[in-house]
Length: 97
Image (cartoon, rainbow, N blue to C red):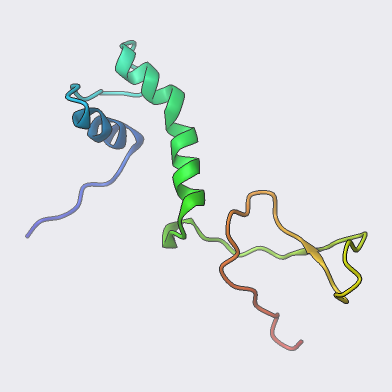
């Protein structure tokens, strides 16, 4: 029976490096060029991938804040999206409303 290894920033970077025929890194804090480039690009690339697709692991629930100034008079209520929202998957009304 095969088990998946836990994904870490080091394992993800090492896998990416293997695609360009480079050896793996041991730590993101290594002094070599490969680790330095992984540190430089990792957060940005992860953010781009999380925003590009709807991933089940990257979801959260948030209470929306009513917009103070309505920009469109067509709607009775308007809400601001949370700053870290990439895609709205579902809107749910609280129980009892």
